Length: 467
Ligand SMILES: Cc1cc2nc3c(=O)[nH]c(=O)nc-3n(C[C@H](O)[C@H](O)[C@H](O)COP(=O)(O)O)c2cc1C
Image (tube, rainbow, N blue to C red):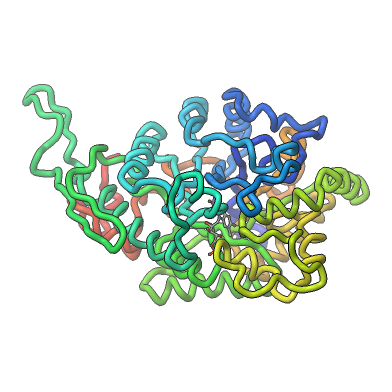
């Protein structure tokens, strides 16, 4: 038994946040034990980050999007009243404060390949990588709420698959900027010779892709990880193809055990087909846990949280992700074909369901991954069973309240996972990528397509890099 426990690997455990009053939930800002409405208070994030670092959490993850839950261009009053994806603020702004009060905790932040400019985006991530000593990750998305965001930006909406073609191009340019301009030892800072950087080791890039162009020298000197550690969220077939090429960690939309197992196998096989080690890609799913001392207590808490949801909010939230207004459809029919342009995975998830069934599911589950309600032991058992059946590497914890759900996870569930060898281990490495790839490997691995653009560092020489 002890051997079996010792042979188990810890799971990747991150914590999902949104910089808004509700997080991923419908309307739990109103819960008397929830401080989510303090999301504009810097101390709120600093306090949370310190707690997560103490618990050895693998990372704090910020979901984000520019879109809002507009239905046919209009945000339902109920969404505004209940703060459902509106209002919300920019998580990038609080990340330096998080880094300032933590030593190890990595932060993963979402940035869209549709709405951010590649050069500005690369500069921002390189700067965050520097100031954190290599603790930043980029969740690459082609955008939830893309239709509403396109309106806000005054741009045309790009079609689903083309958004991924653009994202491929965007990443190729990002690799060139972050990996291809500065050799790792270009910066010498030698006052005796009055040389800050060696001009022979700084190179202009010259890129002209189908969607993006860039010429010149990237402005930020080489950072600890160069390319930030790459997350990806978007689970359609085209999304998985993109993930298999670029992602180092995939945030997969959980549906059923069978589908999730197939999706995991598919991503790994696709990665293998493009010359990468499929098993080296981490795959995680969203997980909500409601933990009680008894199953009954947990169930009561869950019912209370569920009571903060309504059909209108569920519909608006679904519309935010998928662009589909469920309330305008025939309740006894499935979603009509042709409604998957904004998010194929959100619609495919409910293949064969009637709109009524979808609304019922969304009313309790929202857009969460898996929900598990019970004692810490029961929840841990189910996590074991799910991970074994699907092959996922870990979980992104989607909370209801802060501090409530955080307390349950950090104080009750993690100790249980620790006894099973599944809790994240203390930090021994500095950069986020090393947390996944092992000490001495802060850069994209050699099989990753981005590594081809690296200048001044022989393949396989990443362990010699000075960071
Ligand atoms: C699990 C998951 C999490 C996502 N998180 C975000 C996010 O934080 N911000 C965002 O703009 N889009 C997010 N998306 C949307 C995707 O970027 C993508 O645009 C959308 O899912 C459509 O692509 P798909 O059909 O391949 O899933 C997420 C998608 C999934 C499946």
